[in-house]
Image (cartoon, rainbow, N blue to C red; front, top):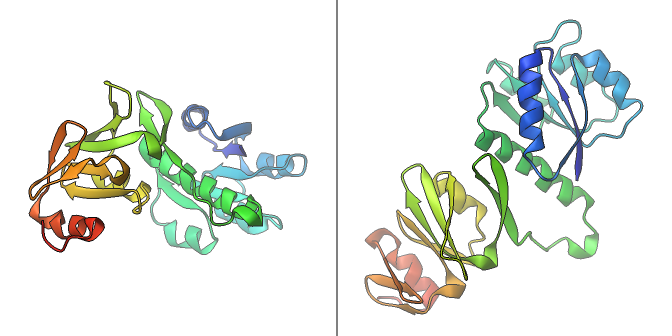
Length: 237
């Protein structure tokens, strides 16, 4: 769990931030603060892993607050202004979000912080072990999906269907195929078409223009046929 605080001088923005935090299962909210001085006082009393921080606040700005910290937790900046992005990244923030922030973009930033936290804190003996799951947003909740449960993924414009083993009901989530593909381990999944990604473990047979997963036939496009040939050990299909 990541212990986190939210810092924003706008009550409505702080309320929205709290709501987004509550939807991420690995975040543990500690407190909310309406300015940087409150946050500074809190950090003297609590150990915090992650701060969601506004920049433009009365008194001490978010950037000034970061510079004042001797021990710095991970920080995700959330602001209405794009112009501070370079300065923010120069201060080694995890991510920089511009309001209004979608839940998908918020979760992506949180995932970056969580991955960094795990990298820093996992035992040395587990240094090469990658997570065998990921989370997707489904109807305002985050759903855990194990890589081993996925048979194939189907793209539908702004949505994807994640088809699972032993389930007739796919998970439907609003995300691009490209974004989802980046979260999948390349050793276990392969894109065979602009609309399809398949689990290599669940392929039952391959033909020149089709991949079969059980009795489901999926098309192979010309753009991805060479990659599939390399995986199957055949130079031509």
